[in-house]
Length: 563
Image (cartoon, rainbow, N blue to C red; front, side, top):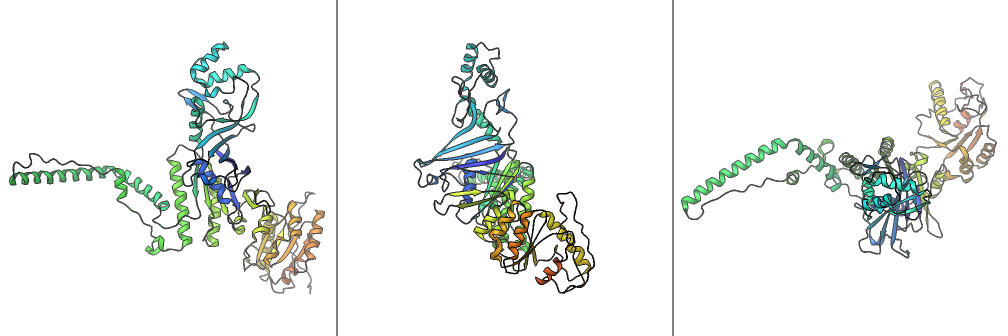
């Protein structure tokens, strides 16, 4: 099963119902204390109620009632469910799916109680016609009675088959979206929940405020699992050791008994040893595994960034171990602020690891961050930006292509001191083309920058319907870097955008492409990216497919000297 969305209602800062959609990789971005971790903790409560457990104070502070609702929607559902031996059915056959064919489960916690417990519902288009709306709650004998009453030709064994026959005989079932109680229900409704629960994804939450010493439970948990696995492989050796200890203990006891009788024969007629071998848990307790890094340095003596990186790795290993020992076929990794205390190189490694993990079958990854730089390396469709209304303080969640504009405006972007120029283009293919073109020119003229390797130039992709927004709002002004904007000529609105950039008066410059342009090299030199080498020119090409179907050529050529 795959998590498609979650809806929160009356949970902490989310008073009104709010729905969040999930991809295989989803990243929540926003300021501190804005509600990012709240979403992850709501999921932990829904799936496990362990690392984070529901408390009476989790209901919204101004709630008129204490009921918290957490609703998760799933796709990629199990094809069949087995309620009893041989009684196979499906979610669709029991009318337990939404109109779009997804499974929607809701857990309602009454936080007015000191220890809130969950009531579980399926939200589905279910029969509401009188006499047919509660068949899941009927016992076998009750279903048999209804089948006999309607004289239906169906075997009187197997509840799913009898329900199916009754629903088919009803005609108009008046399908309506209703909440069907299954967690504490009776008969097949309860069995269905047991089957569904076994197919739910495993949810593993790594919190940002966890400590990161090698003695912590989070680290020791997978290490203890490793010890347990090792002990399982040497059980024959352990048995031999225990037998040798038993024999030696009995020998000592017998010798002691003989010596005791020689002192006072009437003191003890018998002295029998009772041998209790240690349990598996006690054997595991004999071993404590520490972690040493390079040159034998203990992990807890390393920097916080290294410790946290190792802890994230242990978290992943433990989650995978739990998945292997479980019947569940999918897993959700939820990791808060993975960039914390990490060098940029490690951040990039983590990002690539999360991308790869999210591409594996049965895996989803959910991240939180308040670093737009970290989020910028993630797919646009994965970003969920959380903000609050300045007046009502109600949280909102935005997703879409233009979300980074809002992120930059709200959080700002930390500039890299090496970057001197921002090269703004329409799309990813332009980036590829400029890098290839500059590499070829750099091979002939070392004074020209190789954009593939030159850290002084950073590409910014602005194209599509958001380009005008980026230019008009000037989101990158806080970086205090010159900008070069290069757009295709086949979109009329781009001319206005180029004129806007050129009118800034801060050294930024914009142009639209023509089949042979002689301006770029000169402009790059004026931005101090290369020394003056007037014998070189660039014939500009973006390599993008024009609407007419023709391509602009990529050909360097010699040109006359230009001052």
